[in-house]
Length: 124
Length: 514
Image (cartoon, rainbow over all chains, first blue to last red; front, side):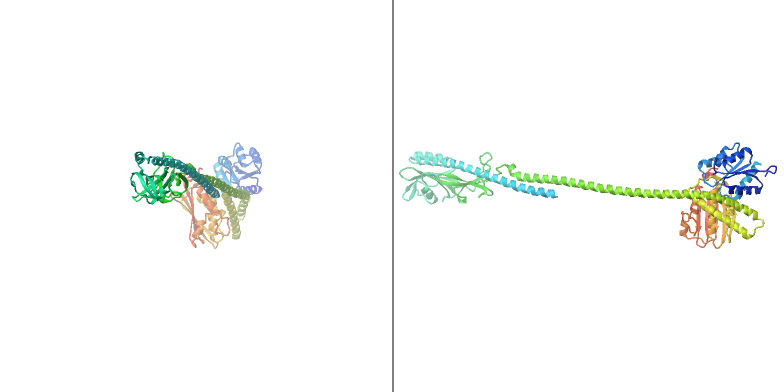
């Protein structure tokens, strides 16, 4: 972890419970965490702020995670996608092309932390 | 068959009727022909014999003239004796004679005498046997004069020898027997065209007038007088009718068969149609059932997916609680947290198995550390109280698999092992490389199972447990086989179970790409 500046994580999920728990979990580790409740807001937030890692749900209202993933310009270094659904071939291909990893809900918290940790190590 | 019987009856009737007609015609023709023969013979025989005897009687006055006439008569060959006799008192004496038998001055006797006595101005005739032997036709005619004189001739007859008629002769179509008598007296038979006398079959008779006598002619047809065709008409008619009857019966039979065939065809088609309708109904029912199943599957998928979000939040919350209390948590709280983790894991597994069964997900392979994956599985499904888990990994490299799917398989094996040991025990997990494949074994020290149960554990909806969907092992086997791996189960009752999962070591062998 880089101590000079906080490692910034954006959590994007329309489920408040998921957002809140993920914020708690990631902040407990020491990351600076922001949230967005849907895809449109996520794009707004990303336009104004820089993030090291995005943890984003696929199924969201207004704009889904895969669409956001493709609209990000420039893309942040690391995007970890989460999904509660089996992805269609088309979405899976897009996710595989642009995302760092994909987590099927419910996933072990340790697994998420492992991925973010390896991203922060690689991004450092 | 009725048709044939009717035609047989009709043809029998026709046959009888026609036969009667033809027989009548035949009878009439025979009578006509016989009468003709009689008339012909009457004139021919009567006239010629009478004139012959007249000239003989006239010639009797002069021996020279008699000799001439007699010689001429004998020359014909069949006349054997020519004589002139005169009455002397009650006797008749030969006055002149030529040919065989009799001599001048000889008194006539027997049949000759009787014939001569009866002779008058009209010719008399008779057939009799003579003392010299053989039969003779004798004719006698009175000669006018002062003394009663009679001209007399004898002709050899051989009635037993048939006088055949040739085809060219008149009346060749008849068999004729001529009797010098008014009746068919065999002793008076003069001649016959056949040796079969008296004539058999249908005969006709006619009188032949020869002088004062009436001869009898009996005739029978040698061949049908009305012609062969006419005589065969009844048979031809009957046969024709029978043939028509057969043809009609054939037609009727054919039509009836066609009708039967058509009816059978209609029955068959109707049955086929009903079967088709039945099939259609079944198919429709199956379709409806399938649609219901599909709707149920859709429902299960939706519910399953929707459950995954709250399960995810619960997992995160539990993690946070465990972190918050870990410092000063007592064993009881820790145990409760383990139970919560295990139950969330069980719920997640049920959802995953259900989704994987109803809508298998394509594998999303990544490089996976086997030891970490096994550790994670045990952490999300910690063992219940009384059960200990032993890890034993030996130099296992990374493998390229769908991480979540293989974790699902391991969780299935692990929770099965837990449930096989209600009284507690040990689960031993080993991982090693054998023959270019990673082999993961999960052993339990539980109840084990018999061969019959073991043979069914991979079938969907089969469960030896009181609870459970019966999908875990079926789905697990499917996932493993999708990774070109293998999943087996061995067990002995009372000696626990061993589940062995093998996965190919290299991505190429896995048939998937990273």
